[in-house]
Image 1 (cartoon, helix red, strand yellow):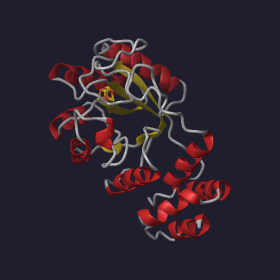
Image 2 (image 1 turned 120 degrees about the horizontal axis):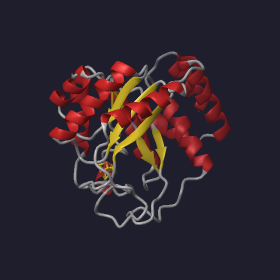
Image 3 (image 1 turned 30 degrees about the vertical axis):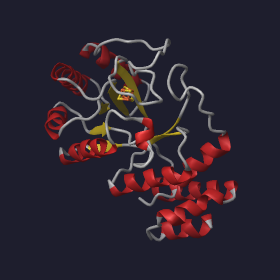
Image 4 (image 1 turned 45 degrees about the horizontal axis):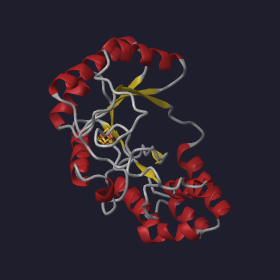
Length: 262
Ligand code: SF4
């Protein structure tokens, strides 16, 4: 089955979620070999290396069940601080550029940026654009098209907003904002002329059906930069006792995401 589906993808036929689901029972070695062929066929051997800075940490009003930065959970290990100074962000961007990183993302905790923090992020973006040879991304929650246009004017080219899981499973993970709000923000970023990076966290208790549903939602949104994160349960969060996915399961998930037609 993996070989047949891979052939269909090479000939640019669309596969259905139902067909993708058949891959969950496939022999793991064959599945991964074919996924590797798909990667080689469409992407070659080059890759885009990106890093992030946690530009504002903790004190978040939201209740994402995996997150140490939510103010709702008794997590000891999280550092809390307001938005960093633009020059500190630029210094970190320069260090990353010198280390061979292609893209650098300014990540902030919180549902969205307030006016003052939006201004601070725009200042940092402009400073990095003018002084550092690196592409810029940011991840700052549920922003509007106006916000994205301001950020683009200051050098932003890509916006990050993970959908995290399927539309059906997301309300089990977060109740303080919705999947629809996330999609609206992704579309607003695209309308502002930004490319979008969006993926999810695996191991939140979701099924393979949820993961495949996420992959197809991302496909419908035209997203080709897809982070596949694996939950590292954090003491104090509601998911602290969630079992960690084993290596075979992680390989299977990443391989199946490769079968998402481009
Ligand atoms: S909105 Fe972001 S920072 Fe806040 S709890 Fe959710 S993931 Fe964490």
